[in-house]
Image 1 (cartoon, rainbow over the protein chains, first blue to last red):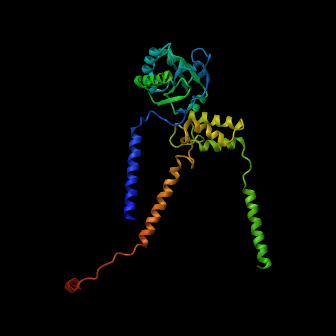
Image 2: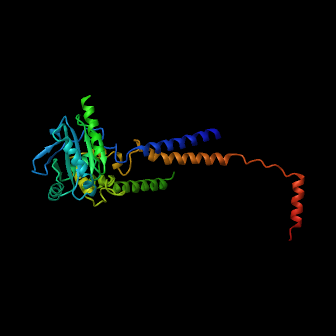
Image 3: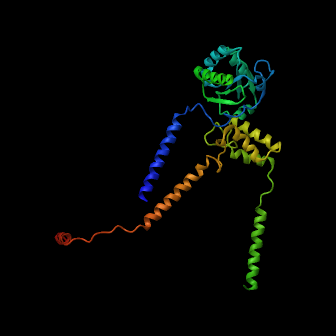
Length: 177
Length: 150
């Protein structure tokens, strides 16, 4: 009986160590729960620049990078250069970068994009419903949507250029297969 | 049983039924349902606060969505499921029993059961046998006692 208890104790310790090892290996920005692996929730929201409707459906068959941001969000400013570089790199290709303004006023968001010189499209999620449907915690958050319309990845917090490019290229390669 | 006792039992039963009837909850109003569902949902931008108790913009958006879904005639389960689809089981302040988070409920029960089993086993175990002192040990002990001042 004592031997069995010893085996059980060893198994519990090994199990705990294994769980912790696997948990700490994961990137805390890459949250897999919620909407990842599921179809991207559809939306049709007014454009920040002219109020015309932009819907996710119109980008069907393209790799879509959705970036939730706000003018009051400091980490959003941190990631802005990376977004600018990626926008310039993929402009006019099968990759779409779309900003979604989160809990912010239209005036403040317009002023922010003008100040930073952002030229990629953004839409206004005035009542926060789209953010809720994607499971957003707070800005900045970035979602990678594949050509099949499935959310392939999600990044919480400021994103850098290599992470953006890796996410985009992985989806482009899987689309050509 | 005498007639008097039957009357007392019947009276107590009647009082119990009357109390249960008066304490029953009637159908909830839409506002009460919104309140109840909001109290079960975790505010994603707060520390352990429910959507009902949080003043944050996100919680307000969530509460407004709950109110809209209630007005649309969705059931409580459907409304909870909508938030679970976006945020996972984490969004519920009380994780469901039948899911990977069920371990949260089962682990303490398993630990208590294991502890009780070990305690019972130990209490039933025979006391360790103690050898009788040798003559030499007895003699030394007597000498020691005798030499101690009274």
